[in-house]
Image (cartoon, rainbow, N blue to C red; front, side):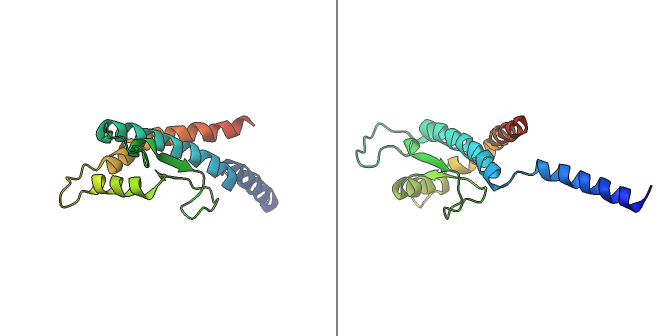
Amino acid sequence: MTNDNIYDQFEAWLKDVHKLVPDEAEQERITKVGAKKLADNLTEVARKKHYSSHKDEKYGHMADHISYNGNDIDGEHDGRSIVGWTNKFHDMNARRLNDGTKHIKADHFVDQNLADSQDDVFNAMLEEYKKGDDD
């Protein structure tokens, strides 16, 4: 076996490995599916724990305004996705409920949802990753 043959085999192996690594557009597609799953789970938890009969015509209910996007926090399309509330009012209320205040006992519903959703998010992203193999 010559060194050229080993080099050629290594190059072929490396090309095969690179095919397994998604580019930024594929990463965004995959992480966006995971973000949607996380947002859906967070919406469900927020409705169970913090949905009220209060009718706020301006802001609505916190649980009804959870969103996800296929970009990072700065709006860059780099393969990452984000989950959060669509307005600052709900975001601040969620932080207070999650972390607690002097007058509100923390229930850590966001933190717990992140932990509880890991398998769901991973499996959703894995399924989306596998779809790339079908092309």
